Length: 334
Image (tube, rainbow, N blue to C red; front, side, top):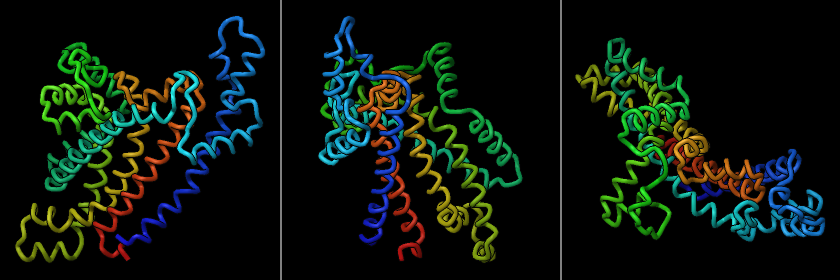
């Protein structure tokens, strides 16, 4: 992958981040509501209120607030959370690993199941297998992720309590982690009991997030595969006596996968956003759950930091998607 390609994509990301920062900063300050009002104790004087506004930089015009905030961002300072009275960077870094583990688990599950369903549907084209695959994908696509979450809680958490429905790990285990990546760390350290408990807590929210994407991946890949199977080189492979499964796996899959890579990259960013509701439903301690609390509390520094974090994730994922294009199609490397 040429370094110029990566540098060009990173340069194009700068205006995006600036635009996101400006829009979010302005919108948060023109919507109704006063974040300082929630911090004022009963009987606070006007001087106390003015001191709080000065402390959080809300006493200056919007343009001055933005310049000050942008300068702090360039120095790695996102401010102090109004509701939690803690450094925003510290709060986000403490919760981000949980969200990343949930989103990665969901995307891996979605791609694995989606590819498997697409291959089965393509192999059994115009037969019962394709009908079953289309029926399943239609059902999963029609139900949003948060509704799947509620269904799983009622069925597998209440009616038949097989799996945990809240939290990230059983607090009774009393295990101390060195990082926020519980799943990875427990696996590396060989703590299989801890690893199993984390996986059990991760299953329901990850599956709820993954199911709508399973349908999207399966439908797009199946359609692409069926289109590629009409190409001349596939007909030549058939004439040479190559079997249907071998043609699908070795001849058609790589070319048909390019649109699916695009979808997977875009949907991964949607998964990060989708964790907001799923984390709230399952009381999962990620940045999505924290974002809802920040909006309810109108915690401006925390909301701004979270939005920029989402924007950076979106840009990084899109860069990785562009790089995977070149890996799948050598002509794009030029």
